[in-house]
Length: 241
Image (cartoon, rainbow, N blue to C red):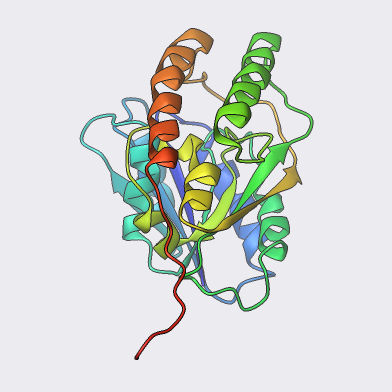
């Protein structure tokens, strides 16, 4: 029914605690599910921890990139490999709480078709990050919202829910995971923000800096703005099927 996709890079020490929490969150709600970890070319003990866990966890699947390709590439590899029609994503550092996946699932309209573009995305209401990261995120979200009109307060949140079909139909580019609300709306769909928890990182170090993300974000934002202006979603009145 649902695949949880978790891209990771050098997250040794965070693997087993997060997987345990995913099981605790999903087992009461779903009869069948899987956890798809995508190792983005880790050089620490992440591959070993995943291999050991995989040997005793039938619901865990592991994919590995030969070299680091970025978070969006990790999400894409996981979604493409997923066996179930609905996808939930989580950051691999443990800052997203898997216990919030049921809240995103509850926000899904009843009997929503996987063909209908739709997205639920977390809104971190009490961020446990440095002051500089929080300031930069607020600034970036304001600029993005003004340019894209995506009505989303926190597009950088890693916990999301969407259909596999929706994701694979969207335009692909590096860092696409930060623009899913705008792209889903571009496809004629809707998105909803759901308040979620946010925690301090369990182990290791953040892979993102303030300034490197800012410069990349400028180019990405310009590109998505261009895509939004070059789009037309036809209204289908009749079919002969």
